Image (spheres, rainbow, N blue to C red):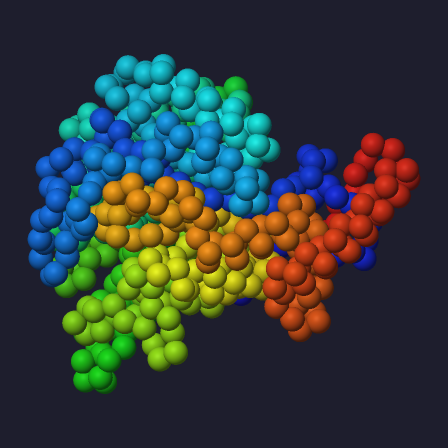
Length: 506
């Protein structure tokens, strides 16, 4: 059973205010997401050291590659760090009212206890540009990167290092909390540990270190809880929204019946650990259980407060993975394969949103996108995934934002510059610089059609769903205009009747 919010309606005393109790209009976030390190690099992070040790290529067991391509982010990059005014303007031109970015720990605290005030000033300048453009920032404290000094201490392999992350979280809020309401502690903790300690493609580059991997993800979740509580204790903490971002992916086994069992075994394990089951159980109950196939070893931890503290939940969704018995990525008949070797699969996004609704907190799609060098399938993906989002909203999922990954083609970790997710094209050889892709125009049309008012979006999606239609951007725009007119009219009546009170539709 899925726990959902009460569906918005125009049958009561609806107004433009939301039901959040603040009297303020609740905004639906239409945004892009970036990692500042992937986009601009830096000098002092664990990933920078990892590249210096391993680029351009290093083969790993099981056919994995540590890096692909001829260029690294340390050699050439889109450089939002220095071109932030231009990139914020590009986001605004694309119809964005929100922008997710990482606050890079290694830039702010390159050496333990030493704050780089020039980096602090640069982030404030970036926030100034967003303010001027009417764009809401959404900040991530740990997006796969941290200072090399923290890595040298053992990083999240050691429980005693959690205190350093908590101190960093408090410092970030002290520096930027008056300007940023939405914070995520971690981006994709299970993905980071799988790629860093199982496949070896991310730092620290360990292979099949299964027991250590379990400790790392457990320590990250413990660090989330401690950082959440520490942030809330700060003078500004109660006004901030602190969440966690998870990569929701499922694995489906396929192939000849006699061999499918091998693929199914691997798929079940990856569904549990990397995909969604481990985090899903933890979000519902606060119970963490890490089980290791064959070895029969377990790690367990129960959050003392039951359900872990979390104000909102970020869903990073790209697809579900179809795997064969020899672990080759695949797709089912009729599906379109992307450059990242997974198909376009919109039903999985709907399922992820409905499943995440069980946590009883607002949901943001913090990343979704497509690696598509040909740009032939980008518009198809955007249309299908946006329709899946609207269907979930109509069915009661409390989805409050849609962030596309990413603004400009960037360095996709071990895949280098070969995977082109950006709305704007960029090439490391300098041949293309921030050119809007034809397929990206589908997202621009949706973002400009989607109402920023959350209630209007919910009501428009619900109306069209009741009529048996999944809206395209033109239908949605027309319906939203009518809904906004009705909501505004009812809001004026409510203000005349109740003075300053704003009665929300629920």
